[in-house]
Amino acid sequence: MNDIITTMFNKTFLEELFKPHELYSKKTLRTVFDRLAHASIMRLNQASMDKMYTPVSSGEFQLIRQTLLIFFQDMQIRVSIFLKDKVQNSNGRFVLPISGPVPHGTHTPGLIRMFSCNGEEVKRL
Image (cartoon, rainbow, N blue to C red; front, side):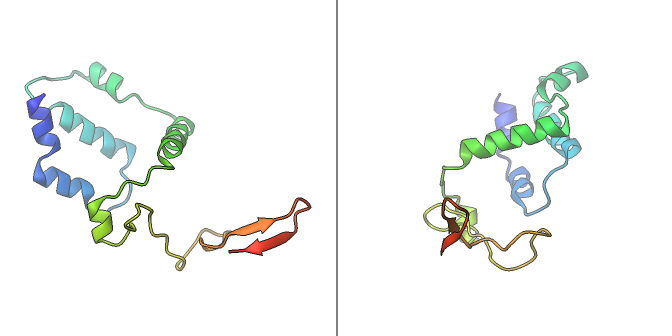
């Protein structure tokens, strides 16, 4: 256990992990887990590793993602690196830029519209 914890909190490992980059692919994430699991004298065979990191379909992956987002949606935990980079406000909320490209058919974030029961817009914030 000590070997795994030492590897997880290794300065080089953490710097690489938190360096801004694209989201890890499934294959890359599997490699990260594989390296962590094999950081100690304990070794996992392929079957055991597969049990720890079982393959999921895209739909199951999205369901897991959505479940995690729902679980964490009301938590506003401040993270010092995000505060330092001004990605997060001091109240724990993330800063959403209101400029730049957005997906086709969508509007830039930041506008809140309220509608009446019959569908008419009654207020803009």
